Every structure is written in structure tokens, then in C-alpha cells.
Image 1 (cartoon, rainbow, N blue to C red):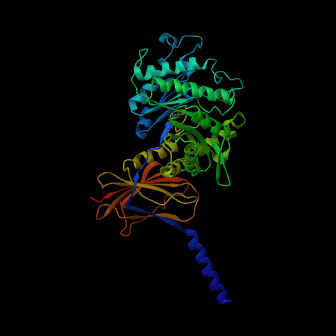
Image 2 (image 1 turned 180 degrees about the vertical axis):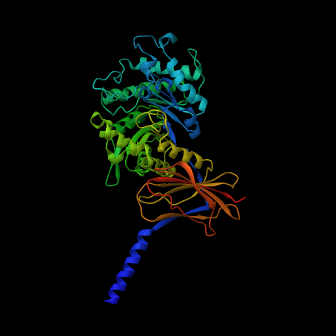
Image 3 (image 1 turned 30 degrees about the vertical axis):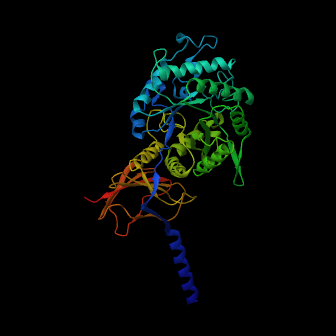
Length: 473
């Protein structure tokens, strides 16, 4: 009886130890892993609701590597879309007076001032209305291509009282496979549109990067195998067989799984290479957290409390941890650019309707601060249910940063083991958190233990932690 009680006690203690012990993650600062890649691009500029909300200061903090212009009217500004710039398709695209550039000029101005490069989407914004107004195939593809050329000349060559913004990326249309919200025509018509416009632009400006088609569904996984969609294969076949320019291939994905984006990037890279597009860039230029793979809260049937609760997950601590885990996992993926949707105050944006930064903004701010120590060092590969880590050093070897995402619920206290920092002596640390109570606030500072262990008792999923290290002065 006593032995039985003793064995039960031992078993209970072992179970308790298993529950309270969290996996440790080792960061080795002596092993280089290249540079931390600036994949924190976004959709949407800082001016919203016709100037009633100006997010310029916040966006400047993020130092976004690329801003994609799409769905601008949804932020309350009639700009960017071809139909808003060239309102009457019967007019002559060679005449400057037939364009209305001013609203788009004003929309681009603060983006240009911030220094962020621009990807200009040539096409239309999404239409969720029963009646479709502007997402129809152009009646004259060659004329529509010339209108696009007029837009390029205005923003890159100063034509029609324009500018010299040197916009390099020009994307043709958006989600032609998302019917009828983005395209009311046939697949053949959208393939024709891309071919005519891409060839026209590249003939006049060979150095510009032309691409697309910004697919809503590039393909799906089945039993671990990626199967490209029919539109993907038809598009790549058309570009290959007809020598259609494709400087970058763009796709979109919203997912409940932050690790899926890296898997998709690898799969898409293989598909591009198999069609001979080895030098074509791969852009994931719309992505975000999609809780439970459920779009219903964004429909009319989901308006109200359901939508509020859904957005609270996307814009709250869960979304922040998701965003950082995504950015970390993409570091080793064959992807050239990623753009979250969005960095403005749209329904999926980083900001509230009133312009208040949400947790997702602070997640991106934490990643930007990580990039201030850009020399990436070796960390464990991201895997499901584990603490995700990315770490770096500055060029002088006197500052280090570790960014961690705790997205998946876990038991116990996560612990980081820090090895081989490039300086000798005591190490000072500062710990910052993004969680339900903190917006990248410093929650602890002190001196690192002699054995280099750093328990993160404050890090309870979902949350993001940024650890800054420096020599103790």
C-alpha cells in the first residue's frame, strides 16, 4: 500500500514536471545565417477617409520595404484604379486632359515622402456589391494598355504635370480568378489582358518589372502535395509559350496556419521553375490571419458582433503572434516579397477606423526593431507548437536582438538559452511584450544570468516578445 502510494506520488511529480517544463530554445550568436530579410511589406498608404485619418507617422516607424496599392477606395479615397484615373474609355489616352491624376497624386505623396517603394496595381478594386460596376473586361485591350502607359509616364517620366517617382513594380489586374467580385469575364479574356498589357509596357520600358496576376487561389495542398490551380497552369503556359513578360508572379493567401505561407512559397517556387521562370520573382502580396478558415464574418450575414469578434482575433494578440510567426518562418522561404493586407484602417487593417494602432501594428514594429540588428544568426527551424525565434546582431557586434512568437498555447515557462555573444563580460537585457496588456512595452530589464538562460515567464500565448541585448555598462 505504501509502495503503491509512493509510486503514485512519483508519477504525479513526474507529470507535474512534464506540465511545467517548457521546451528551451537555443540561440547561437557565433553562427551566421545571412541577413534578416525585410519581408514586412504591406498594402495601403497612410491617407485614409479623404485625409481624416493620416497614418504617416505610424507607417514611417515600420520602414515598410514595399507598399502595394490596391483597394484604395475601400479606405475612402477614389484613387489608383484605372477607371478613376481615366474615367471615359471613349477618350484618347494620348491626351493628358483625359486623365484625372490629382487624387492619386495626393494619395501617393506621403508614401513617396516616407521613402517606401511602391507596387502600383493597374486594374480595379474588389466589388462585393450584387451589381458589378468596373471589374469587367476592357472592350479594347490595346487602348487599355495605352491608358496604363499614360499612368506610368505620369508617375515615372513627369508627363501631364507628373512626377519622377521611379516606380519599378507594375502589377496587371488583381485576382482574375475571383469571380465575379474581381472579374466578370472569362479566363481567356483575362489571359489576353495580361499578355497585351505586359508586352506593351515592357516594349516601352524594358527595365520596369511587370507581373501578376495576383491570384486568389494559386493552388492547394493534398496529402502534402501542392496542386497548382488550373488558372495558374494556364497563365504560366501562356506566358511561356507566347514569350509574355513575367518579372514577378503574385499570389494571395489568408490562412489560420502561420506556417502554411512558407510551405506555399516553396511549392510555388517549384511550379515557377518547372515552367522555366527561374528568374521570376515570387510575391505573396496579400496575406493575413484567417481565424478558423472562416470568411463568413466578412459577409453581410456576418456583420455585427460576429465580425467584431473575428476582427478582435485578427487585430489582437492572436493576430500579432500570427504575424510575427509568419515573418519568421518566411525568412528561409524562396519568396522575394510579402505584403500584409493592410497597413491602413480597412476592415483587416493594422489600425482602427479612428486610426488607433492595433496589436498587429506593434507586431510589425517589433519586427522592424529586430531588423536594426540585421546580421541574422542561427536559430531553430520553425515548427508547429514551438516557440518561434529569429535573432540578429548589428554591424558593430555590440547589440543583439531576439524576436519570439508564442502563437500556439503551451504549458510551462518558455526559456531562451543564449550562447556565444560577440562581447565578453556581463550582458544587459531589455524585454518588450506585445500581448493583451502590452503594446511593445518594456516589462523587464536586468542582467543576463551567467549560464545564458533567460526564462520568459511573461510570455503567455498568444504573445510576442522582443529581447534586446547589449554589453553591461
